[in-house]
Amino acid sequence: MRCRKCGERTVFSSPALCKDHFISAFEKKVYDTIDRYKLISRGQRIAVACSGGKDSTVLLHLLQKRGYDVTAMAIDEGIAGYRDKTLAFLRRFCFERGIPLQVHRYQDAFGASLDHMMQRSPRKPCTVCGVFRRYLLNRHARDFDLLALGHNLDDEAQSILMNLLLNNRAVLSRLGPKAGIVEAEGFTPRIKPLYLCREKEVMAYSFIQNLLTDFTECPNIVDSFRAEVRDFLNDHEASHPGFKELLVHEYLSSLPRLQRQAKDSGDLEPVGSCSLCREPSAAAVCRACSLKKEIRVSSPERQGA
Amino acid sequence: MDVFIEKQDRHHRLSFRGSGDRLLALFDINPETVILVKDGQLITSDTMLKDTDAVRILSVISGG
Image 1: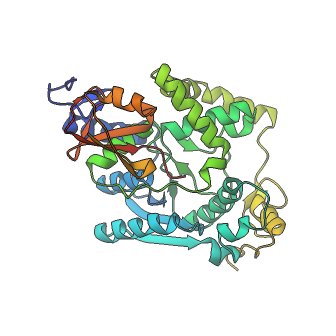
Image 2: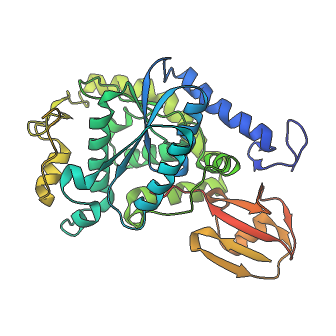
Image 3: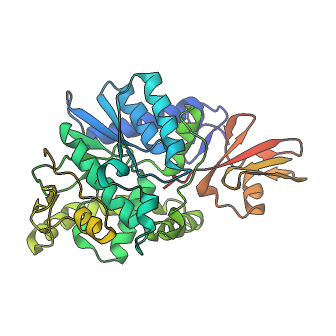
């Protein structure tokens, strides 16, 4: 297979591009997404949610390369043998490039690591992890104008299908490259500049640019509904190439209608604040505080307390 | 051929000639979930491989 632009040896097959043309096409796709969906304005301060994995590292690299004001923000859930490795890579990466890094730990915020919490909870680890991670990201992103997430097209295709299967219309109306249609005090807007990049493209770019850490997989991922949906989508993609992109583009074309319907039907509950921690919440008590009580860990610190 | 499958953290020694696609099929690996590396270079799965090659199969799936 030869590069469709210059005839050199290809490093990627869909589209067929050589190394140099793949790099420029990938970067153009990300920057075009930022411009087309007006994700970032000049001068905005951006917290980039980083795990040390390929997606968030590529995102951090590309945002810094374009001259945006970025700070890496990592959450240390306390997953032994996993997060410690990815954070070591992230610390080195940020140090070498002069990028400020914040690391916020479950242990400090809730008095227990995720591993410890799971010894006391019958819930799936991804459920607990997701709630507490979002809580900490939102709380600490408040000092910034935007919170950038490394979600790629595969992640989004999974979210779309999962919420379709669960008939979760409110969540479906909040996906997209710029997340959230309800503006609430204390809620930093989330952006997804890698939204239209397939996971395989991100991996290829990450490999070529030497942005990869050693492979590590979260030990809890096998238990998740998302992993089941991911495997289904990848199997379907193999027999129907382009299926994931089609799903996301069809979703994007339906998004304005989904948002209108969600607003008109009252699916979107008004966002107030949690009576315990004062963080934004549609319920009287936010999910983080409910889970904290259930698992019997420390109360999340009150913002500003 | 020496094949290193990153997700298994394991090397496999085998006699093989054919495309990367055929190699992935031999190990029952979905091409959508991996990239192939030979001599430190990214290759496409239609690349013809020979017995003396060393190939690394890297998972594209996020850690979680």
